Image (tube, rainbow, N blue to C red; front, side):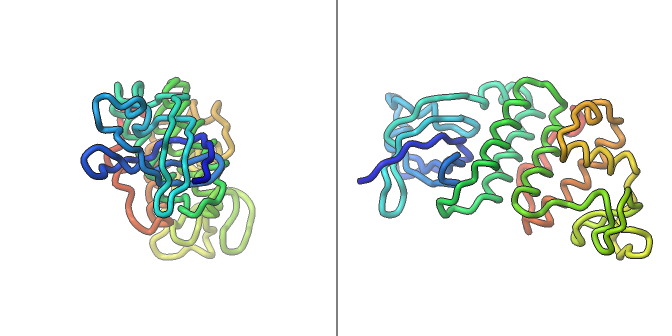
Length: 245
């Protein structure tokens, strides 16, 4: 059987039979891949602990008819060990994994940008450089943007009038002017629009200095936006501890 090497983040696992697991991976080279890790649930498994969610690994994989088979796994980073020590970090990380899983098709298409975004976000969570809620919202906005669902924040999404607009509508795709306001629109604070733009562009100096009320408003807008465009709710998102952000 032909084989390939892959750098990957483990997104989730499922039991298979008595000793195996199906591992869902976001790879740098091949997009999302599902592969079997044989015997990893046995206590004597050489690499079972390396194939847990949040693990960044270097793999040797053989191509199979239905599912590929993992034969080697070397750990590059075990983010889960540190995330598990803090509930807010763990739930933010779980939401990231679920979002990456949902946004990436399983058809061997390269998803390098999504992979690098996920690796960077997990690394930032672990280092504690920024508040977990800000890191999560930045990840969600950028992941959606890479998938073609970027919200319009600095102009009216309908008429294109530039500048900060008074309204925001999830299903329309972003900011709206007074003339094109539609039912169901909300009126965020101008500072909240600015915070969303900072998270999209990586202006962490502005984001870190933002007020708690603006972070809370942005989190609500981002949550509504991501779940609308994913068409069904993220199971992990309601569990996120926003009090620690």
